[in-house]
Length: 368
Image (tube, rainbow, N blue to C red; front, side, top):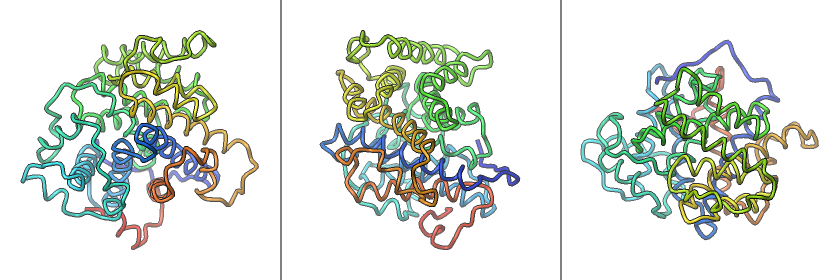
């Protein structure tokens, strides 16, 4: 999939502020969930979510400069830059893809080494020039949350609908994870965030996501889509079941695989209190980092919706105000939060038709 844009479309000021709030709270909620499993410091899932956003920013600036970058290649190069900073051994023939480091790679949040994903590191170690598919059949949960930034990318790629975003999410997961269920679950996560951003509550957004996954024209392997849809339906049924289900482990899901992690995240995010949502998401013996990050991102998207609908905030406030939705005790440290805000702000501000891209922007996100 290549970048394209609709130059005849533009956000008004209020729509832009809604999208900014959604981007910052989705990424901050993800980081809060990731940090809960990392002794208060955001870890690898947050780093790769920010790298995914960087792929969009640097790719779009490259596109605006007259190039035709492909989305999978931009994601691969962003992940390789992250891997180089993390000390992951890379093939000699791809090291040039990591040569043009920039602002994000220099941030301390990206340089903290907190290994969580052997699958991701192994796939990047084996990567060749250009996305050729990972050397595995993994459906591990880690590929799902790092695609959160894709939900803010429709103006970048010229897609406003969920099917186009699903394709972007599938391409993102496929950089490191080879199983079609991993691809379908990542697509479901991004489409769910998209529907929440369109104003739907969690139940309605999940139902619409299930509808896409069960469409007669499947977005990826039909069996994989059906499996993810079944898990999302089970999450809805258990959310609507009141107090009958109070622990994720009651479901019989271990949370190691993508479809279970997504379903646990949806079930947990139904709780209005972030601390409770994250606790519910981590109450099992599987990939707590992933399930808590997924729940945090969904919770953040819902919080952004509430923030935008309240009307008691300063209409001139750009990005910083939405972070007040997240309790101070759960926010990442100030330095990490500042990076998340900057990435989210630039992702929405720059990656849209008609945006003004300054020299500072190009130095921060070089289109190369």
